[in-house]
Length: 193
Image (tube, rainbow, N blue to C red; front, side, top):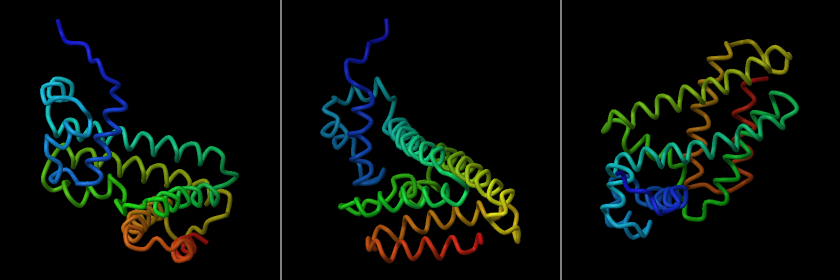
């Protein structure tokens, strides 16, 4: 008979997220996870299988929280411009409140792990495809509404926006000046008009 988990999985994932976010995958030891989650090693292995599996679950948990926030913000947007601005605003708010300058866990993971582990690469590819598809839908709507220009396809603009968001998050690790970051957002979005 399999053992029943006696802990709150979401709380454990949140604590593991904090330590992975602070130290990265390679810098986080199993002892760090034991200390952060208050679980013993056997509980971690029994519940997650391995450090890598736990990390993948942490990434999924982190991504689902952000996807939910983006979906809510986009759903409340009046038009495509507002939807894109909302996405950047959510990232901007994370940057300016990130007092430890940790950056985005997913982007940090991309630079640390994508070429080391096929399961991480697969996760990142799916995440990228999902984000680009979301952006493409918004741009398509904006082009149909004649808000955005049609000099490039919606897919090309979506890829541009995705790359811009990634760069924006990287800049935000060192530069938390809200005025600078707002100027950068306006500069990025000028391409669409």
